[in-house]
Length: 131
Image (cartoon, rainbow, N blue to C red; front, side, top):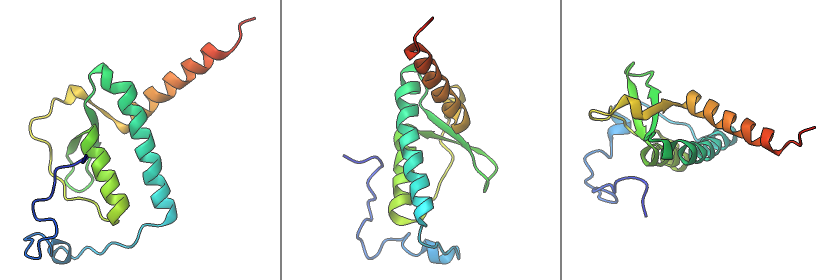
């Protein structure tokens, strides 16, 4: 099972995108242990967000892109695949804005975190004995 579409050029020595990293001049250092841990934490949070918000009709997260100054809408599986790719390769994926997403179906990472914290606080309050 894959979290992302299969690369039709995977393993192909004539992959037309193979040298794109070299062309854009971007060099990526190996991820630090802290960066790896942060990505693992993000993946864990993402799972919680999907469990809590998916049944409420939320399809994923919206992230404001610093490069193009546009919001990017990521479904749960695509964002998870992007984070795993970064964790595995140390390089972010090339991104494009989603085609005609419904912004009402996406929330920010901060909103999702606040929602998860509120649910957690409510659950803790239910565990406390009343006097």
